[in-house]
Image 1 (cartoon, one colour):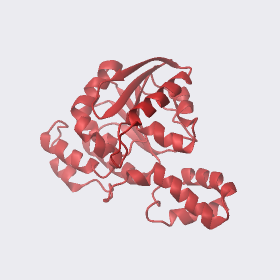
Image 2: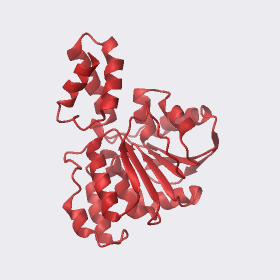
Image 3: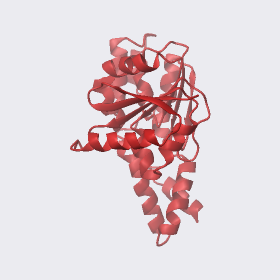
Image 4: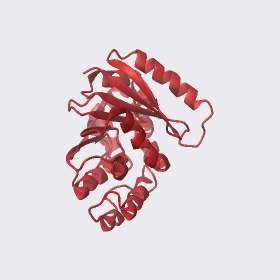
Length: 268
């Protein structure tokens, strides 16, 4: 019966690009709680909205906008290319909120981690389109993953356009943490999304990542713009998470306005 639920969800234009493995896991979890197939489909879609749908903008991010291709001259720092990239990021709510922070975010993070030669961007959405602000070397390896193929199609086209080496994959981080090694992993606003699916998923992920540093961020406002008490709540969640992961050696807060940013140093 789980297969039937998955097929019905995939028929929805809103969720046809979502990882089948994630849909199968959610269907298996929700079916025993449901009053039948119709109720299970509704429950799965409700959870997909929390994990995927709430972050999508009104326009699709796939394919890569022609404005980005037209602005590409071989220079990531070109103002016109940055402007086109920033405009494309608006198609994903989480990335859209990060646009005003880009000039300060990565220099502040790299001051703690060092400039990575390999980067893992987990639950990435459209964040790889912030590459023009990262200052990475042209041969730095960029590994991007998400459960939603819609932004990943744009990400793959973007990395190919700028000739940045790396890989793009669909991955359910709750069930299958990545095994690749990298210098730094970005977990931008990821913990809250994982918590809605499995309260222990974030700690399992941090215990298994083959990285030296994990950059963990939390929003200071909801997607609806409300911010009262959020920072205090997320600081408490971060403290709980760091205390529960044996590999954590040190945690450094990075001063960035508009987003709570912490860098965890992990044992190898």
